[in-house]
Length: 572
Image 1 (cartoon, rainbow, N blue to C red):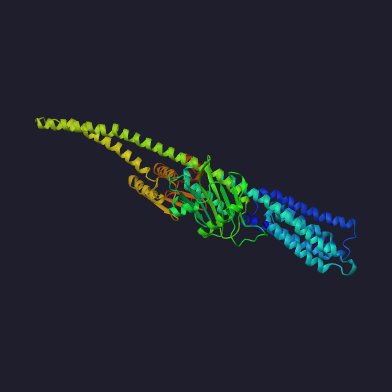
Image 2 (image 1 turned 90 degrees about the vertical axis):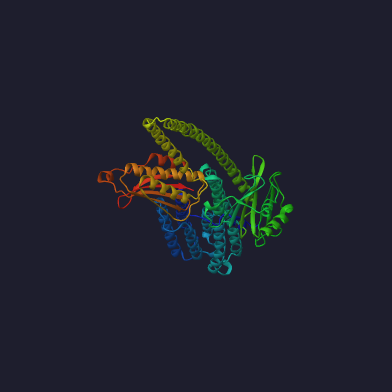
């Protein structure tokens, strides 16, 4: 199996190194400077090489040393003269100039190329390292041959052998560098997966976040998760296509034929199908299958089955691993792409991913059931409270009305005190009943559209307290029930603070989604006094606590016209 193709899946999306890698920048800059200065010192001590263009060669080495010193100085100051992706190509250009000025293919500066290959391989991965290796070997051969001495001084053995050295050793460096970077990226992804355990986000949003991270990691076109234990005898499908928002991932019902097809592979078999377009070495079938139960490869046995499954799904290549939890098969994960980006090592990695995510999903579902049970108990408590606190007094009211009616029927017209007592009873009970109804209305968010629920709540709040409340949003927001309920409580607390602590007559609620963060802004239309403006903005404690429980943050700012804005950001 050709390694360049095998590594392609893990390095299609390469990012700039983080600021934590500034130590690597300084180390690379220092090694470049030492390499340049040592070369200058060595040819000064032993002037046998270069044997031509001596002055120009010295000048070129001095210029390269100054260039290296500048790069090192900037790396110490956390600055850059050139992008990191360009620096090793500039090094190669300098090395080619030194080779051309000295002895061509016999030049002592030949070994400098391994520095550029090492930097590219361990900083950017296999593809970058292998590209530098191929370019260095080709350019060194062309430039070295064109500038090599002719006649008996031409060393054919070095001309033939040194490009081979570059190719073989450069390939090994690129392979090891790419492998190290891939392992680091996998560890980083596993760390992100383990941080998805917020029960308020629900199963759908947690699965969507996991699929989004896998799609970005592999640059896959389609990710899907089939779970057979969410509903009895009715598997559910979670799917995420390229550029699809995470919050749109929902548990979908599948036609029986599709469910049977996606779950057709045995529960202990993981497969990789690479399709027909993949470059292969002779004898490489392009597919890979692994028996998780016996811990053995079984490619030949399942090669035809994986090809048939790809044909039925109309996909070019895919990787599929089963889901297990506590020894029981619970579904299957699919990653699909239009080109060959998977290899056999991805099976082991994806098995680690699903082993991390399955307990998280199980805990979220368990907490959801506990919440449902708690809600049922709360409804029973409300029923008892209504019966004891509302219905029973009204039964007494019924008896008192009957007594007044009997008095009037007997000709006794002195019922004014009785009517006054009945009036106070009705006032108290109506007030209590309104409290119950208002509490029930506040909990209607779950299961409904979040924006619609916010607008209904804002309208009711405006009607109750005479505060003009406007709701603005950038597109629709579909949130899980528990998360939506918490956000409604944050909005309620923000509007209550405006009503209690300001003289504002209006407020604006703004909802927006930026990347993977929900932004909630609550603004009032009352500009503070000069004394209030001098003080630091007050952060409401209740809102801050709710936001922190959701993994978010709160800050209070003042707009250009002096209005106070509470800004809440919640990660999705």
